[in-house]
Length: 158
Image 1 (cartoon, rainbow, N blue to C red):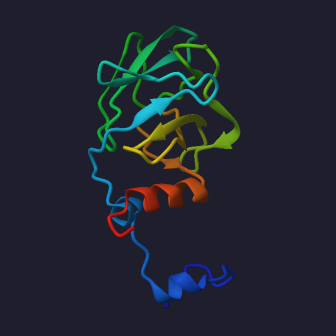
Image 2: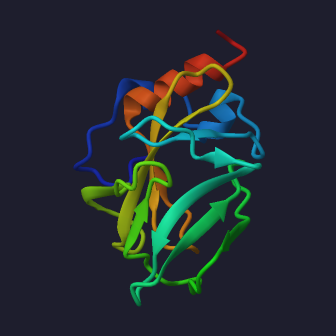
Image 3: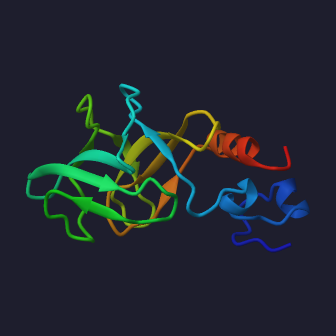
């Protein structure tokens, strides 16, 4: 058994079973379609094969961003200039206009603001996904509970 930090307690599961990435554990393919919803008004953010957001860039310019809703496919386009390494000022729901920025949460990779959306894969139910506002950052997180719901809901073993 190996431990990165001797101060961190080792869970018994880690001693018995090797760790596997989420996509491997859940059976989710890299190009799985994610249905996305606003956590505030519940309206769908998916339109014409893209997840659509109202964005504000660092100069205060407002526009629309269309992002691929397929897992790990980073196809993005926007109606305003957004540099690849730029941290957006705000990301809002295109229906209700409420900010999707998660208060008090910062990206572990580059300390940027984080966005929260609800999503589902097939019939997993709505789960919460939090991701970085920086275009080139791939860091994201979900609650452990949602993570397990996704794995159990999508696993062929269950």
